[in-house]
Amino acid sequence: MVTGGKTATDVTRDISRPILNKPSTSWKVGFTLSLVFLGIFVASLFWTLWTGIGVWNINKSVMWGWDITNFVWWVGIGHAGTLISAILLLFRQKWRMSINRSAEAMTIFAVICAAMFPVFHMGRVWVGYWALPLPNAFGSLWVNFNSPLLWDVFAISTYFSVSLLFWYIGLIPDIATIRDKVKGKYEKFFYRFFSMGWTGSTRTWARYELVSLILAGLSTPLVLSVHTIVSTDFATSVVPGWHTTIFPPYFVAGAIFSGFGMVATLLIVARKVMNYENYITIGHLDAMTKIIMLTGSLVGIAYLTELFIAWYSGVQYEQYAFMNRATGPYWWAYWSMMSCNVIAPQVFWFKWARTTPWFIFMMSIVVNVGMWFERFVIIVTSLHRDYLPSSWVMYSGSLTEVGLFLGTFGIFFTCFFLFAKFLPVINMSEVKTILRNRE
Amino acid sequence: MGLIDKNLSLRNRRKLILGIFDDEDKLMDASSALVHEGVHIQDVYTPYPVHGLDRIIGVKRSNLSVVAFLCGLTGFSLACLMIWYMYVYDWPMNIGNKPERFTPSWIPIMFESTVLCTAYGMGFFFFIRNRLLHGIQPELLHDRQTDDTMVICIETGDGVNESKIVDIMRSKGATEVRERNGGVQTTI
Image (cartoon, rainbow over all chains, first blue to last red; front, side, top):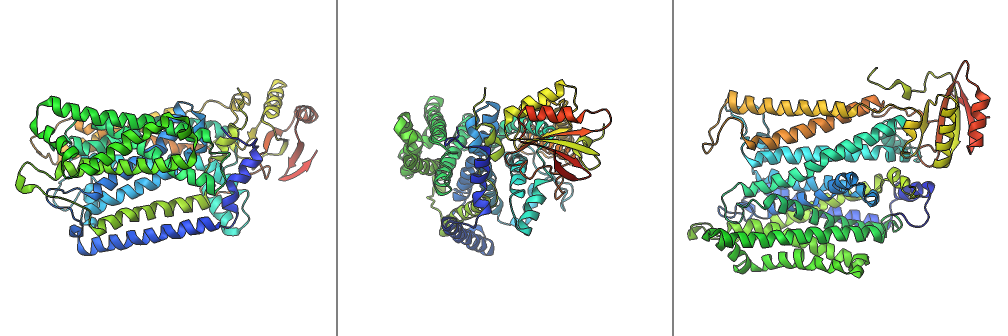
């Protein structure tokens, strides 16, 4: 799982190198580019708040557009982190150890990006706290516990909080390692503060492992619940194309699929730029592409099941919704989704495709594009032709909506570059346990 | 039993013998041999978790799973109480004529609340029990103990045969054996 005959000393040296050294040129270029995108986000957000969400092209038929598409897309991406750290930990898959740290970081940053969209879709964001179960000025009116939108508030905030805790507890031993390496006064203070006096005592390690295991056990149903709840935002409605019981497993599979797509995108770049080829090996990429292929196929089965059930139900509105997806004005989005998510990942049946980094990188982009289209198709094609033909409209994102979406890449990558500079992107203490495959 | 594990503090220890190791197998052998000879190992410091070492040196299984269960029960009860109070008792709402008593639609929030309280409650107790607090000064015995070096720490006192401990450590492959007296370390 780790190649190059590395020892514990090598692991510390290699993984802490970007933190102890001055930032490289590629880091500076990447960070600057991320800041440009962050600027686009700030500008688009400012324009949205200044003018109102009328600057988005959503309308009374298509009341969810790019915003909720992006929300679901980013939440989905956030799923791979917890899947890798929690579910693969429970299954004792040791290959996760090189990639779990960055995937967990990705989860946290992706959930931050995701949260932007429903929050600002509220329009009057300054009364956003109305979504919380707080007493308010209108008598004792409380939130609606029957609404999946409220479940979402609880699910996303719990997911974010628990992922953050899981990530941080995993980071403490490595922060302590960095603490004992850095020289500067401020750096020492920073790492000492966050390492919480960690010494590596066996007593602490024993409890640490127990806590990690319980957190993994908790996070596993949590990660499944989050996208299940996101899917019920749609499935509990009476909109044809949304009102289906297959949505929870279908969304969860799609989330893992897109999450692994993003993990592959990031790690293939990171292993090259940071010289981590011995830690994130071809074997890791091979394992990840197999999961991508599996979940892509699950998503494909879900697409076909939806079509079958629409036909089998005998409900003309359901049948029309799916016919309209495939052959209506948004046919291009539907077929982009189909080809990117179902057909393209089948190439991973071939070993060459699973072991060639540049090709996996290209495919991971295809997967991410495909999954964005999936959410767009679900949301827009189901809404744009309502029961009354007078409510039939077309929808395309405005410049501000596109700007907000591109801007979230700014948030995501700014956070990711800062993470890569100041924290170890590979879990050193865990990787050290698998250097020699002792039985 | 106090909440904070007193074994973790080295501050008021009189005299310590430290065996420095660079190999996990040698460390395990030395620990087993010392325990076999009836020596009480205060603690072993390792840069990564060494499986089985906690059992060798006699660390009891933690009760954190019980704490986690109790925290989860608290979270579940709080969610039940919150929903009942807000939705049934204080201001019943009729939305689409859906039932206002318990319905399956309450389950997601109960579940999320249970998970949140379990994770944070357990995390909090984990930090307290292990003396993990933001900004505190770590009590390090070796400057590479979080990197690649392992340290066996034994507190000596009346009736402890120090030379035997040193001999066992050396014979089992310690790279160095040190003595810490009053905060000052010297190589033996």
